[in-house]
Picture (cartoon, helix red, strand yellow):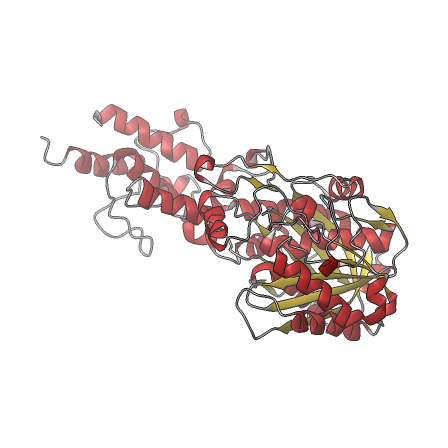
Length: 91
Length: 402
């Protein structure tokens, strides 16, 4: 499957909005996950849905969500991480 | 010791979405078993079951709840909602630590596991949904009921195959009776009508392909059902003091192990459980008006159960009414005893004796009054609910009219 930078942003907003029960139009690259009242289980569901959508493995550690290479603080930082994995070796 | 009242009951099963619907179906002798509507049905040899049809989880649960609840948990919560609403209990901060939950389940969230394995082995995926563990653990239903109503007392699950919910309700009875809890929400739930679940049962070759006809000479096996039933067991004085309607009183419980064979029943073990329940209830065999049989429709169970009832009840066995409602709702495995307690309550409360439907011809080895095909109206003082599980585990509950 091919993804553009725009379609990655759109897909991730859709996944996060679904878990946070928000309208996608309320979210943008600057939205911070800590403002969305996602509980820990919703967060791992977000990670799972992203992995399924893009067929990638995200380095997410639920024991220590803020550590590691995967910055999940905002929609934009998730998009950047996903772009890295999706476009890896294709540039 | 405290007396134990039943002040609420709830269910969902193939006969109905509530207790009134289910009891009405039992009184009509209506069979809820039909063609299964499940994935990969064409590859099944057994294609019938007591399936809950047209159940849309979105009608009952929010999206986040749906991703956390296996189908069996959904059924447990639907049943618990009806039971707790009927009880009229107000779970105050003071009462909450004295209210607990103990539910039975034979296999926990087996549909969740089945779907996960299908993704891994069938589709070749390398990941499963992140909530497979909390969805599939056997205590999921008990925990979600505890969370949904803020019940902070003893909470756990019991898993003893087909006796799970009777063992669970026996535990609830003891906890209230001894004062370890004021109220226990109890019963059982099961939903293993999925490809892997039915294939597993097919393997044992005890399943009927055309219907469940307990005690009938033409019987040829069991039929699976699914669903849940949940009850509110409450300390009698507590129920009386708040003016609650008391549906019946739980008076005795007996449990034994055959210690002989992992699948074949031994009538002596079952008979000891029945006698134990009567002794615990402080009543004699002559006061028993109705028995809801384990009555699976297998050759071995039904023959053995009739021997067991004769051993335990003596001459009273010749006149007692004993039916198997599995003929209508199928075998709910870990939820069986719970749905079947509904028939016992209908008997002691309203004198409704649910029939054994699908009965065609008498079997000399099952020559008790099995209430063939048509329900009866007859006052009953004491009713027993039998559950005899694989593993040789027997659990019998005794209830009394109030």
